[in-house]
Length: 216
Image 1 (cartoon, rainbow, N blue to C red):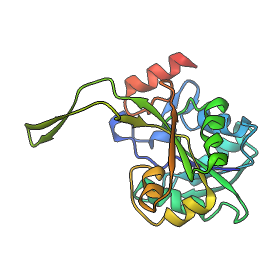
Image 2: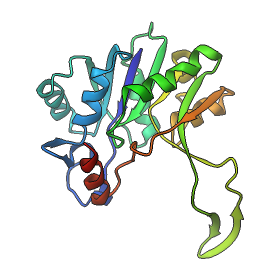
Image 3: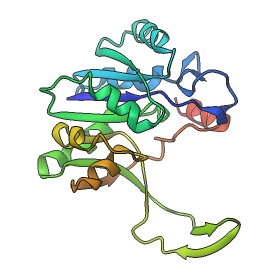
Image 4: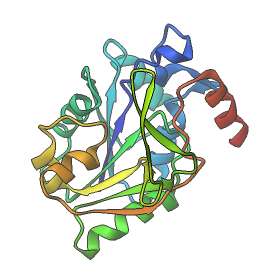
């Protein structure tokens, strides 16, 4: 089983000149935490990192610094998340049966969550995605005007890591979408939703970094 770690996000909302993956989380770049956790996972055999452009070498150095020996390649990320994943997939061995895709911006990935998204692949699903229920009222707006209020029943928020049969993900990877599950869905793949984890917070602001740091 191989992991693709998408780490090419710019992170402008963090107010940092460095890419998001190199914002400071404790004493190390944010990227170090999910990279170390995936490297320590008993489920993961190899890792390919999609790095911010011009930050490939620092990614390699960081992997060496934290002893992430499962990192087999660091590729240049694309302009979109989907493009970054495509670039990383090209470095995943052809004989890989399962591929786990995770966003570096969600640093607190656990081995338990990796196991949770892998389980449905033996049940006939093409992929699995962790989700959390929507607790707020959701409205669709046009400009500044509310167009409608959506029923919350059945609405969830998707997280990563997401796990896929490698054949299903490779077949769908040419598309564009906000996550890999949507690409596989568009190709007719069956995706199972599993229970997510509130600690898999996606870091988008300095406040998010502070909160994640408090959980370490």
